Length: 492
Image (cartoon, rainbow, N blue to C red):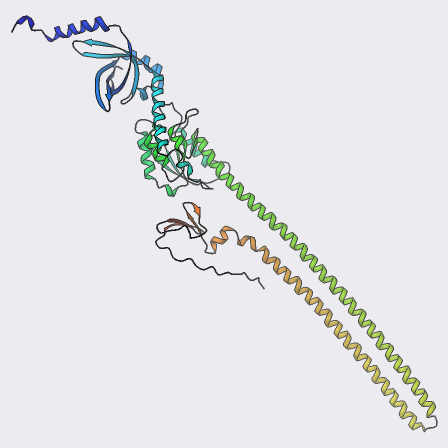
């Protein structure tokens, strides 16, 4: 072996350094690369491992360094997005140079990091996620779920003790309409690499059927802070949720993937709370308006029926007075006729008496007295007959008058009772009174059921009683009851 062909390691590496310095020293270039590892020491120097992959296979690998003074400049340019850009798994565009040291080997020294490239990379990933969701038909899936007319049971997925959480809760608990809401908090992380996994875990943990709406909120932040809300798996969890999802992720311009697949999205947590308050207030106004219309209609009908009753009472009184006057006139005519007939009969009998006196003047006084006595007796009988006839007619008139008065009172009492029965009808049909009598409201998937045609075994139903609500499962579908018509009888 020729000793002239044996070299030391330092000689070889120094020669390599000379060659590289001749070709690359002072040469800077832009490099697009993925960060495999990232570490920062106590002095502020950052040590990275950069890789290039092809079909998940590493085809190139190199060490990289960002010196502390350069790192301070980069942090000023990137702002508070630095930690979101310079992290393991991120793809960056950096301005750098290659340096070689016999003691430490080859390394890449990074001088700048392009913020616009990182933001563009975020948008590219976001568009890829949206395209995949569109292909799988998930964009409008959650939007197809109907929102309840009244939203009270809310599953809140948020980070507690944050400004966004406090703003949302304050909107609901201190609303000016004094509306009540049941808010169940499912705490999660809303920033960093674990945010999407934390939110998905809480959505899997809650029972969608127990809530009217799921609310996902977060305070403001940059695009990189909101990157977890562009996660495909989180978007799929929101889209496939059986409960409508509202988002208030706290950004004014951009719309995240979570916002796109949610049922409804808002710019801020406060906006979500304000919408929930206005939604329930609108329902309250609608119900109040309907109740006021019913009350007004009831009052108008009462006034109308009172007028009809007054007209009937006046008509009865008028007819009673008219008939009384007619009977009194007939009685007076009959009385006068009897008096005239009696007077005529007396005059006739007196005439007969005078003729008889003239004819029997020659008869003895005894015969005359006898005849005179018979005449007086007949006159007395005729007067008694007249008096009895008058008394009978007065009795008949008094009985008829009492009958007319009693009939009028009975008619007025009947209409008053009918009016009282009608006054009792509106409270009977109030929903609370219906539930108190043992009836119940049956819902399936928050929809009111009015028949049995669409029910099958295994369906879950909500049965609302007067003071409680039960959730049941149909185990057997039996024939419906035959409807027996009933009629409410008026009170006596």
